[in-house]
Each structure stands twice: as C-alpha cells, then as structure tokens.
Image 1 (cartoon, rainbow, N blue to C red):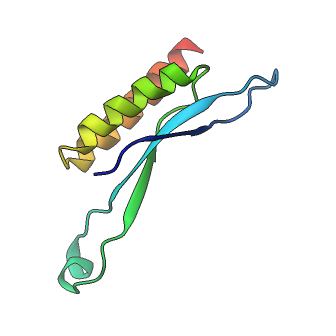
Image 2: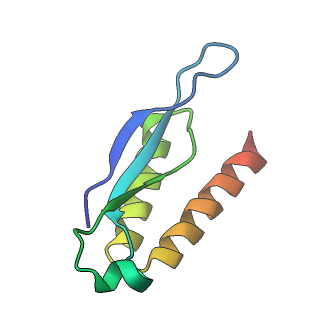
Length: 90
C-alpha cells in the first residue's frame, strides 16, 4: 500500500483554502478480469476537504493504517465515516 498525500481541497465560498488526504491502493480484481492476468490497476481514495492541513494529515494517517490491512471494504467505510463526520461539523 502507498503512503498518503495531501492535496488542495475545494476552496470555500468565502475564499478559504482547504486540504484533503488521498491514498492510492491496488484495485481489487474480480471475475473474468482477475482470471485474465491483466496488470492490476489502482484506485484513489480521498478524504473530505479540511480547514487545516493537520486535520487532513490525521485523515491520511487513518487512511494509511486501514489501507495497510488490504481490506478495501474497511477503507471505503472509513472514507464514508470521515465524510459524514465532516458534514456534521461544518
């Protein structure tokens, strides 16, 4: 699994900058594609836009920890949890 990165997030309506964490992971292969011995692609999982880089770093550390387990379902669950929490606080 990769290391998380921080990218610029969406600019707020008042012009404030935001940041968000992202991590690239191997795309799970299923069905015929897995049997065809094709190169494995990657998928990018992004966290929500945050008002500080420190919040985005915290998200990135969590994403990286869960990604290391190789459990894509758990990674998607964390992404949704972080997004829901962000929506409730802003």
